Image (cartoon, rainbow, N blue to C red; front, top):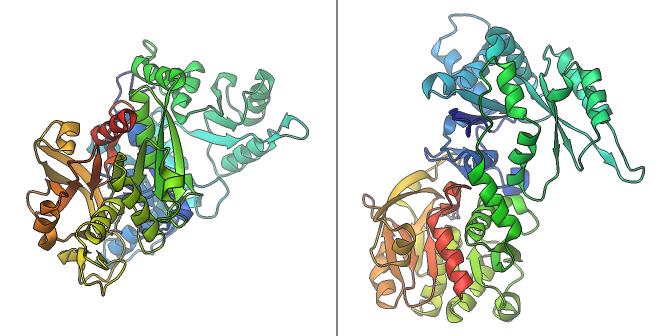
Length: 505
Ligand code: GLN
C-alpha cells in the first residue's frame, strides 16, 4: 500500500534462532530456503516480500540471532570493545539496531519494515524486543510499532476469544513497548464490538485495530488491509501527508483474473515433500502467477517422488497438462523422478526440471537414450561409471556446509531459437542458483548428438545452465531456480512459457 503511494519500501525479517542462516535447515523446519540475488540463503518470507513488492532483497533483509552474535563476537576478538565487558544490553541490542537502521541509511528506502519472528514472550526474542523499545524511544515519530496477534475461534462454542491478544499486548507493554497498531489474525471477519473491546484493553485507538481474516489467496490481503485504511493510519501516526489513496489497479486486475478464470491448467509437481506445501513455496507461487496471467485456475497436484515408478507413472501422470520436477538434495525419491521423466519424455508432456529436476532430466536421458548404464550424479552414487552430473571443481575441498554452495544470481547466455530464448526473448539473463553439482561438460557432445541440447551457458565458467529437447513440445531443465524472481507484477518468463505449453498440449 505504501509502495503504490510512491514510497520506496523494503522489508526485513529477524529470526530469533541461532543458525547463522536457514541454509542448513531441512524443509521440515521452516519450509523452503529462499535465495537472494546476492547469494544469501534466507527465510521463505523474503520470497513473499519480493513477490509483493517487486523488489530484490539482499543479505541485509534477513538477520538471525546467530548472525548478530557472530558479528559481536568477531568485534570482541578484534578488540573493538576496548576492554569492556560485552553484554546483551548494550552490545547485542546495538548490533540489532545497527542492522535495522542499515537499510534505511545505505539504500535510501523511505520505509524499512522490520518483522520480528517468533512470539512475544519467547526467551529468544527478548533482545529484539528490547532493541525495538530503544528504537521507538530514539526515533520518536519515525518509528511505529505494529503488533500482530491471534484471535482464536472456538468452533464448538462459535465464539472468538480476545484474551490471547490482551495477554500478548500486556507482555509487550511489560517489556516497555506500546504497539500503536494491532493486526488481529482471525479466521473470519470480526464484529466491530470485538475490535472496540481490544482497543479498550490495549491502549490502542479503535480505528488502529485492524483485522486480518482468512481470504482465499494471500494476494487478497493488501486489499483487506487497504479497506480498513491501514496505510492512512500509518502515515497519520508518522506525521506524513496522507494524500490520495493508493492506486492498486494492477493488483486488483490480477486478483480479478484469479477469481474469474473458468478453465484450469493441471500441473503435477514431483517431489519428496508432498505433505509440506511450504517446501516448494516459490514454485507454487510462480505456477499460480503464470496460470493467472494465462487466465487459468491452477490445479496443482503434488506427486510423491517415492511413490512413483515405471508401472504406475501412466496412472499418476497421464491426465496432467504439464509436469514439474522439483529441486532437492540427496537420494530419497530420486528413482521416482527418473520414472516420471521417462514417462513425460516418451509421451511428450510439457515438462520443467528445476535444479535437481534438471539434473534428473540429464541422468534419465543418459540411461535411457544414450544407453549409459548406471549413469548418475556423484551426489547419489560416487562410484557411478558415468558421472553425467558431478561435483563442481570449487566444491571439492569444502569443509563448511553452511553458505558454501554456488549461490545467488549468475549470468546465463541463451541460445537463440531455443525454447528458453522464446521465453525470455533475450540472449543474456540472470537467474539465482543454489547447488553443488553440475552438468559434466565431458558428455556434452554425446547429449547434443542425440537430441538433448545445452541452450543456456554461463559465459565465464562454461557451466551448463539450461538443457532442452527441441524436438519435444516443451522439455526444459534449468540448473538455476527461476522461481525465486517471479513476482505478481513480473511473472518469470520460463514459468509463463511452461504454462502456455501446458495449456496448448
Ligand atoms: N542437490 C543438487 C546439487 O547440489 C541440486 C540442488 C537443488 O536442487 N537446489 O547440485
